[in-house]
Image 1: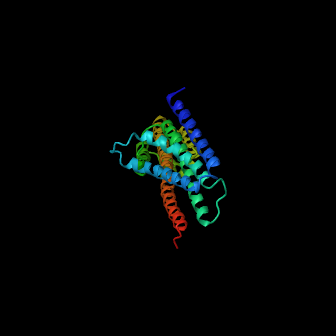
Image 2 (image 1 turned 90 degrees about the vertical axis):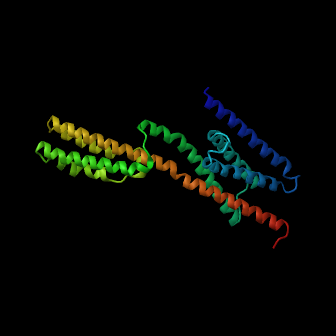
Image 3 (image 1 turned 45 degrees about the horizontal axis):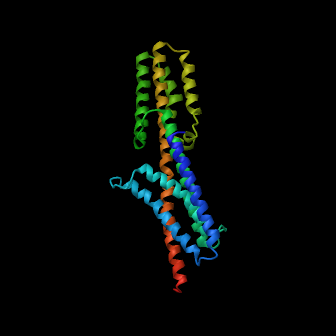
Length: 274
């Protein structure tokens, strides 16, 4: 068993034991300890504060607060444990009232987006490694324009070099739109390469009717087509890896805000405040 597998097994066992302990405590003491839900509420607040603190830890990397990987592991398993705390706090019932419903929806969004982010952060780097090369996300539009400019130059140069408009006409009718088109996000995320296959097949079909130099030029254009497609895959996959944070982080802070409001309301009513 690898080191990572051992760590996952150990953390999963600890998570299971902690969850069982919380549920058993609730079943055993909720009827005897006055306002047991206060305890679960405070525990839930502490857990949410800790989870929100992970984003701050990533911003202040210079502080000696432990490694980011350690924080990530705690973030993952405390996040799962928070689900148990939330269920205990609700006493395993369907939420009622507009505040509880909104609170529960926000909690569900945070949980589901966190699980989705964990899956994406494990799978997308593997797919990017298979694609090969390191691509800076913010510079992808510039790279795409450079590829288009290079292809235009090759096509125009081929017309002058071969004294024939065959390759330029072919490029204009069959390849330019593909190279100039903006990436289709979900098609790239799902790995759909039918568009690339279609234009590459057209290139191969034309090669049968060209001379050796023209085939070399077509091979250069085919390489640019592949480079453009690879950039699109990188752009979409890296974009997806960034996009989920724009859901998870804002809703995490919204959850924290709702938790604080909930505490104010609970203690306000419990002390007879108007």
